Length: 116
Length: 114
Image 1 (cartoon, rainbow over the protein chains, first blue to last red):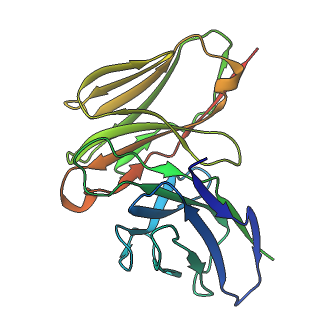
Image 2 (cartoon, chains in turn red, brown):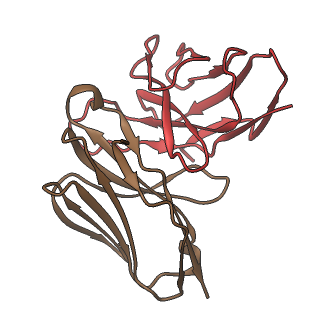
């Protein structure tokens, strides 16, 4: 089945530690996104990538980093600079961000990150 | 002021009721409107997508957009317990800083009880 796979489902971070969240898609989508979801705040965009080897900051990029070395993969690193990392992290993909037609974003099932 | 406002609820209705979920927005650049459904501990699932003012129907779901009032709605007819979830409105701009980037409402928690 085509879809977006996020791993792990649950992740714990110690103080001063960097952790990496995995996102893989087999939908042949060009664009990929990372969102953070906190209770009562909806989803907020962290980073997005329109093509391989290119990515842009979203609204809350501080304390996060990404890479896009392959079309299928868009890992997110939560660095020690992110002081409030506890949240539900969602990865999404779409055919492209430029809007010329029906191009909804499709989501994975998320990774819940907590602080130890 | 947030660009997209959505009443978080929670909203509790009996099975079979008609549910109305609403969002308002302030950014005139928003031209594309979506409703997502999110079950607990899962990612959002696209329910409805529309880009013109008026109504769009899909089974028990109707999406309504009024661009002049900057107001969108999702109606659920004959609601079922399986409709219990968080409903998120999302909007995407056709230009400016909102181009190609989804902006979400806070989500409304809906419970349909038998």
